[in-house]
Length: 91
Image (cartoon, rainbow, N blue to C red; front, side, top):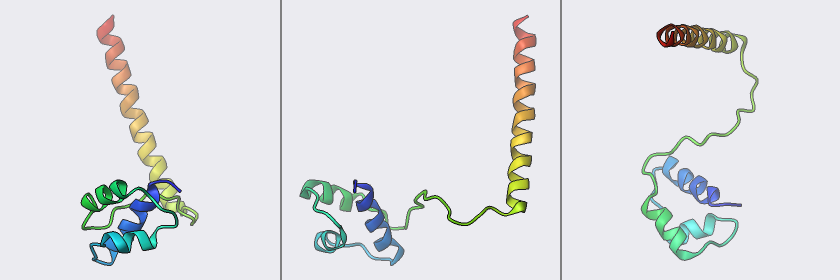
């Protein structure tokens, strides 16, 4: 694993409202990392859990897909208007 594992473990501690020690962090990791890496990670560890972007295993709902399509159509419309304005200014 990469240093992502360190962030995930620190995030788990933050979810529990804990600030881990170096020993606690090392105990939770599946492999060993250099001490300076772990110390820096502990120093910058969040006090609140971070949202980690993981793919959602559940299927999107029809309502969420419809909402997303509406957002995309609105964005497309706005971009087409901006393109038209830019083309008119360059002529």
